[in-house]
Image 1 (cartoon, rainbow, N blue to C red):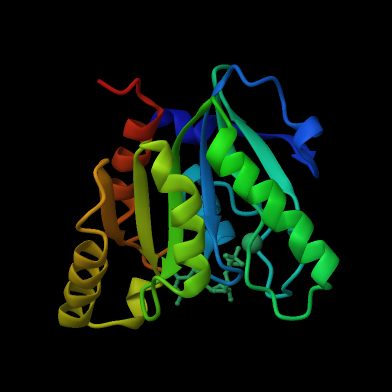
Image 2: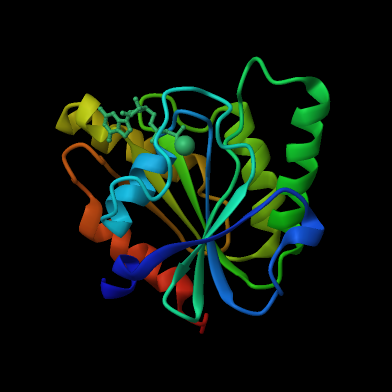
Length: 199
Ligand SMILES: Nc1nc2c(ncn2[C@@H]2O[C@H](COP(=O)(O)OP(=O)(O)O)[C@@H](O)[C@H]2O)c(=O)[nH]1
Ligand SMILES: [Mg+2]
């Protein structure tokens, strides 16, 4: 998927007013802190430190925009679920994240990253409750699938699919590993489809 390879850093945003004009097509990546979001963005874009990979929670507390060529943005949303963050800061992110997921017009699709060993935590479900009423499609990457054997992976994908059985819009669920690159082609194709105009 050539356009993933044209990624370059664009801007960092800390509030609604700082978002770029709501006109270029964008796909956002969201997940709990430590879910493997930065690693996945780096793997997809083939750039080893594009999205800063960190073992230190709390480092990426803002929205980062990357350009994929001239007409598409890849949006790295703040990770959620950090334990030691002050309540006021948590509230600020929560407001920004929920506003963004509910009201951002140029948002075409959401990529949700969840550790395949413990998907759909309360916070993941909260995120989906904000986003899914938009009716827009999503791709779920069940990350770190290298940590599970084949049978357990299939079972995890099945469980997430059945938990989301009532959702109306298209949701693709893909077992993914940045370490082994399993699921990479499927993820690229599914995410590229999010950028396409919906029929
Ligand atoms: N085994 C394994 N570990 C991973 C994978 N992706 C990320 N990690 C590890 O999980 C931790 C968090 O990854 P990171 O990408 O920084 O997560 P983020 O907080 O969601 O951005 C790091 O220690 C990574 O090395 C993966 O596919 N497999
Ligand atoms: Mg990160």
